Image (cartoon, rainbow, N blue to C red; front, side, top):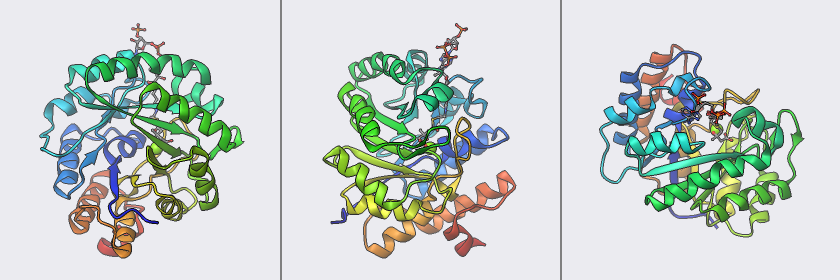
Length: 294
Ligand code: HMG
Ligand code: MG
C-alpha cells in the first residue's frame, strides 16, 4: 500500500553542494535554500557542522544559518558528527540535527575517522545532549546496500547498526545507498528486516539509475519519507563512485503520476535547478529537469 502523502527531505544544499569541486558562494547558497522553500519544500537540509578541513564546501555553515531567512513550517536540519559540531550547531540556533553513521567498518574509518563501534561512542553524547536541548535528531546510516571497499553489505549488519541509532534516541533512520548500487529487491528485504517502516526514510544515490525504482519499492513497503536533491546534485567526497542523489524533480514527477501528495511546485523547482546548473556551469543530471528545461 502506498502512503497518501510523501515527505520529501531535500538534501541539495548539503549532500548536493558538499560534493561540488568548487565552493559555492554564500549568496548563491542562501538564494538556493530560499528558492527551495518557495517551491514548497518543507524539510531542507541546509548544511553540515563537520570539520571544515574535511568538507571545505560547507565551512560557511555558521554564516549560512545566520544569513538564512527561515520560514514558518519549514525545517532546516543540519548534519552534526560530534560534540564539537553540536556546540557549533546550538550556537547557530538550529532545532533539528542529523547524525550520520556507517553500516561498514571501512566507511566509518574513511568518513568519520572512527571504527564501526567507536562511531556510536561519538554519537551517544550528541544525541543525549541534543534531545535534552529539545532538538529533533535524525540518524543516517550509510552503505546500507553496498560498499566500494567491502562489497555487498548483509541486511542483518545494517539492521543491527540501524537499531543502535534508533535505540540511542534518533526519531528517524534514513537508510543510505551512498554509492547507488541498490536494486528494489534488496530495498524490500532490508525494510522487512527492520520489521516496521514507521521510523524509516530512504536515501538513494542514482549512480546506476536505480534510485527511482528503489524509491517506489520503499513506498510500497510503507516508507513515507524520501530524501532527494534538487536537480540531482550530490555525492559523498569520502565514498568512491558516489554520484548525485535521486533528483527531487524526478521524484515529484513520479509522485504526481501516482497521485500522492507532496506539496512541491514542480515548475518553480525545475527553474531553481536550471538556475543552479548555470551557477555550477554544467547541466542538471535530472531527466525531468532536462525534459522540462533542456
Ligand atoms: P577527527 O580528525 O577524528 O577529529 O575527525 P577529532 O575529534 O580528532 O578532532 C580534531 C580537531 O578537529 C580538533 O581540533 C577538534 O576541535 C576539531 P584541535 O583540538 O586539533 O584544534 N573538530 C571540529 N571542528 C569543527 N567542527 C567539528 C569538529 N570536530 C572536530 N564538527 C570528524 C572526526 C567526525 C570531525 C571528521 O571525520 C569529519 O568532519 N567528518 C565528516 C565527513 C563528512 O562530512 N562526510 C559527508 C557527510 S556523510 C554523507 O554524505 C552520507 C549521507 O549523505 C548518507 C548517504 O548517502 O549514505 C549522509
Ligand atoms: Mg548521501
